[in-house]
Length: 270
Ligand SMILES: [Zn+2]
Image (cartoon, rainbow, N blue to C red; front, top):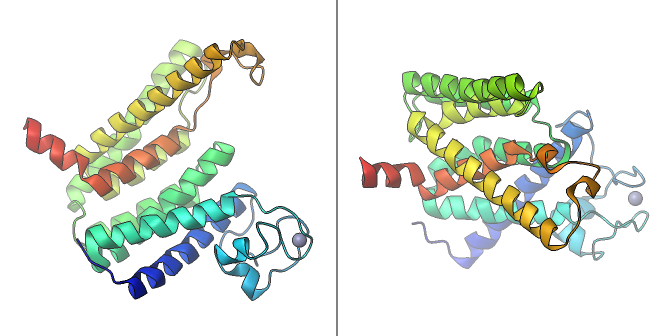
């Protein structure tokens, strides 16, 4: 475990918040079909170009108490939350894995965070994120970056991840006559397999399904307590309840990565 003094802690917190700001903006633009890297930062409400001070993550939000300087519109709290959360994730990764592995895994964590946000907002996992993440992972694996699986295992895991979701969806489609899990989730599993390996991909799928089920059940219990008929919620029947499964896969992958869940499980049971 890496110890950071206060000076480095503040420095890396700021750096993490900046990367978080980029992640948030990229996800926001991808959902709206804009250029996700080179679009100039503009006010989300009046489209006016943002000043340097307004662009500083967290500070830019807090300085005017969550209002934009140009037109005093309320900035969505999402900006602050994502920047703050990413800064915490970044510092935690640095302390747990050290500088070298943090640089190796930074693209992985950024892309997963973007996928989390786009899937959460629009039930959409952009190819540029999942396929791009797969390509970066493959390059890292081929060049034998530390702590990644070897090339053969990586390819097998990617295929396994992709086709597991593909076949689950196929069965769902035969039974219900429509897609259950999106094709985007299959491509996300491809990316996770490439980066994480065979054993991890199975554990990730298990954790994600567990989290999804837990949230689904909580949702049902919450609304039954409130005595609201399910059909009243967005005109949806409870069987039509849709959850962004990609978000659960991302959380599961990060939990597995940070807490080394797969290794612990295999050490206990094998
Ligand atoms: Zn404005």
